[in-house]
Amino acid sequence: MKSPDLSQLRAEIDKTLASFTVARSAALVDIGPELEPVAKAMSDFITQGGKRFRPIFAYLGYLGSGAEPREEILRACTSLELVHVCALIHDDVMDGSDTRRNKPAIHKAFQQIHQDASYKGSSERFGSSSAILMGDLALVWADRLLVESGISGDEFLQVQSVFGDMRDELMAGQYLDVLEGALATTSIERSLKVARYKSGKYSIERPLHFGAALAGNKELMSAYSSFGLPLGEAFQLRDDLLGVFGDPEVTGKPAGDDLREGKRTVLIALTMEAANKEERDLLSASLGDEGLDKTQILKLQEIISSSGAVAQVEKLITELRDRAISALRDSQVEASILSVLEEMATIATQRSL
Image 1 (cartoon, helix red, strand yellow):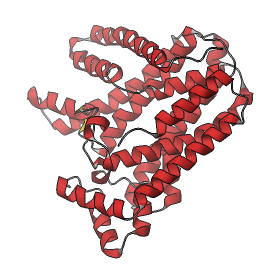
Image 2 (cartoon, rainbow, N blue to C red):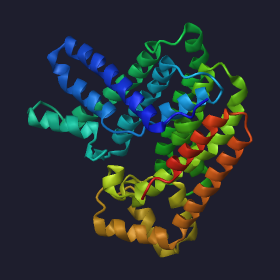
Image 3 (spheres, one colour):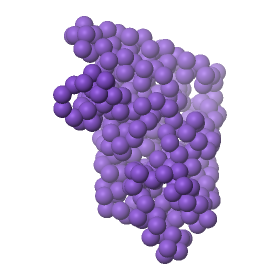
C-alpha cells in the first residue's frame, strides 16, 4: 500500500468539514435569522484552523489494518474533529480563556454581541450560555457527520463502543482537570492521569481504535494502545509547556495562560518539587490569578525554568515518544502506515515553543 500524503489528508478533511458546515449552517438559518451569528461562528471555528490530528490518526488506524482507502471512511473519521471542537469551546468557558487561535473565544465573542446590541441582562452569562450550547451542538454534529458519512450499517455499529468510550474519557479528563485545580494538588502522578484522560486518550489512542474498529480489526487495538497512550501523554506534556512558554502567534493564546488559569500540570508539579520555599509560595499564590501581568508571568516562567522542570518535561516527552515508536515497530501495523504514524509522532511532540 502506498503511504498516504499527510497534506492531502488534511486537505480532504478540511473539504469535508467545509461542505458539512455549509449544510448545517444553512439549516440553522432556516430556523430563523437570529441564528445567523451562531451559524457563522460555528462555521468559522470549525473550518479556520486546527491540525486535524484526531481524524488523521483515526484514518491511519484504519489503513494500518491493511484496509483499502475509502472516502466514506475518511468522512467518518472526520467526525472526530467535531468532538474536538466541542472540547475546545467548553474548555475556554471553563478556563475563562479570552482567546482561541488568535481570535476571541466563542464565549467572549457572544459576550461582545450582547454588549453591541444592548441586550438586557448579563453579557457575560449570555456569552457563556451561548458557548455551552454551541459546544453541545458540535457534539451533535459529530454524530450527524458519522451517520451521514456513507459507511455501512455494520461499520457504524462496530465503531459505537469506541466512539462512546472516547467521549466518556474526554469528559472525565476535563472534570479531573477542574478538580485538580480546585484541590490545588502538586502530584506528578495525578497530573499525568489528567494528561492521559483530558487529551492523550482522546487525541491519539481512541482515534486509532476508532479506525481499527471501522476496519473490523480487533487484533490491532492492543498495539494501538501501546503506541497511542505514551504518545498521547507526550502530546499533552508538550501542550503544558506551550501553555506556559508558548509564542502567542503560534499558540493563539496569551503567553502564560495556563498560569492564569491555575493548571495543575506535570510541569507545575515538578517545579514545586524542586523549587525553594519562597518560590513555591509565590507560585502557589499566583496560580489561578487571572490578573497576572507580563512582569509577573516572566517571574513565574523564570522560577519554572530555573527549577529544571522544563528540562525534565522535555526528557519525559522524548522518553514517551521513543517508547511509543518502539511499540509501534514491534506491531503488525501495515508497513507503509507505520512510517506515517512515526512522522505523526514527531509532529505531535515537537511543536515549536
